[in-house]
Amino acid sequence: MAKLEKVLSGDFDSILDALHQAILSGSLSATYEEGSEFQQGEFRCAVRVYERYSFMGGNRVSLNLTLVGGQGRCYLSCITSGGSQGVVMKLNTWGEEAFLDTIRQTVEGLD
Image (cartoon, rainbow, N blue to C red):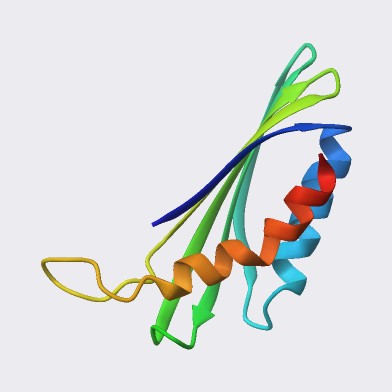
């Protein structure tokens, strides 16, 4: 697994859209699988699940994106999984890191 966490400032919808676009444009095989949203007052939470094919690992990798916040302040947590090989121990996690790298620059540019 690979993980990226960051506190961001800005509009919730703009941040979510920028991340969505970065993920889908970062890989030819990236797909949006499913999502969920919750809002109560100013607090919002969005969960998104994406997948892509990892040529390095020869398998599919998933990315779970969770964005929570409100009033111009958000917390982002992105976790990848499924790109490793091995029965007893995780081997070859390059695909997970590479998937996360598709949004790393976008995240750094948002703050």
